Image (spheres, rainbow over the protein chains, first blue to last red):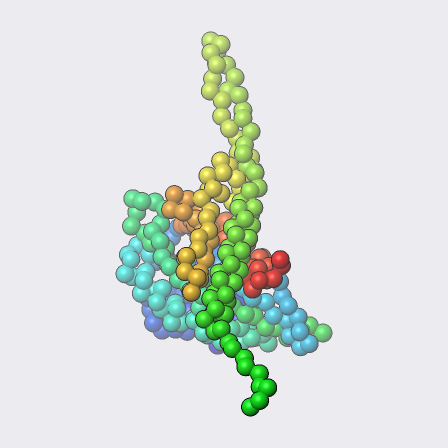
Length: 138
Length: 148
């Protein structure tokens, strides 16, 4: 796995490493947080919520909710990307270069038309629960 | 065996009681999440009315409202008319054997979901997932029959 110190870097790296997903939507068109309208399709990774980190004897852990939103001008093309996102990220376990362990679990997915009724743009949403376990700082 | 003890397990009644208790707990959790979601979108941005003044001929000009406290990206949406808040609802599937509840927005208030997720032109203003994550410990207690 490429050097990833954060969850968003890790998701990018997993995306880039998956030939099918990267073929449907190149990792360069995947943004973190929010992206102004651009050439479609494109995707945004966001973390709408997370619980405060818990702490054990050796590790600190947090449960984060991550969302992958794909905007596509075509329904079928977008659906194929959403399916590839699920196949790539659901149940993926990986480690960060800082020593942390990340467990990604699929929570759910849905799609809805974009708010402009004149456009034929669709938004495909996939929700993941991400548990991050980091070594406790001494 | 003389003087033995007979234990009778009313499994059907027990299962029915358990199902009802689960459904009640889930409903309590849903009501709690529903009110917390409504609370999350209640920060006011009701606006300040600005008078229009008069034109050169002394005729009154129409006034307008300045909404000077909008939500920032990442914050829950602020309240303007209260319509969006009124469209946040909860429902129960009515099946005591396989109970399920959900909290969300009605179709008329679909823009609350767009605010939650963000669109191509507007950054997300999460109110549902944020509240769910904040309330998860309480919801767990309520759903399992605690906190009475």
